[in-house]
Image (cartoon, rainbow, N blue to C red):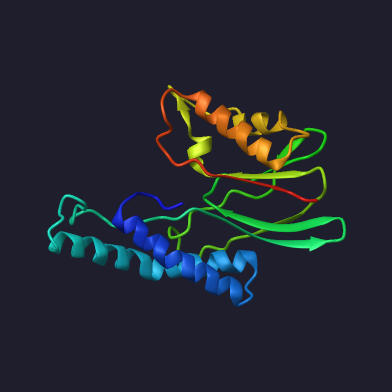
Length: 207
């Protein structure tokens, strides 16, 4: 999820996606991928986004971009690997400024399965860490964007007081599709009007 919107944010995404695929194909571990992507963003993304923004101004679209403003863009990312084994799936995840993924057990217990870490493109030489756990039949892994956790009802956000974890705990026994639909509905009902930010949910279950 890129901080900001518009052409500059699109440029950062356009750089990050192929870099991410290349690093994964080269066999880097989860934490190493974030380390290297962070450095690539610091080295190239700001300069490229700034050039794209100024090109738009030169082309006659000054309303899209403030040429005097900083074009720095930060990226939040949840990245991981899934490796099937006899009895489930081994998951290795790392979160860079992203809402933490939640693991729902068959008994309704919910816990975060990654540590909070800084956004990509912010700190030079940041060192990221990953967490490994097992997803077994009956478990559910939920990952969301901040459009879910930061959905507002007045001054209150949906995830205040572990609201997302509480919502997920009430989904024990449901399949992935029903969990996604229930969380989506609860988020929409939480605030007035349409959500201002994109809502993305990923629900994984081992079979």
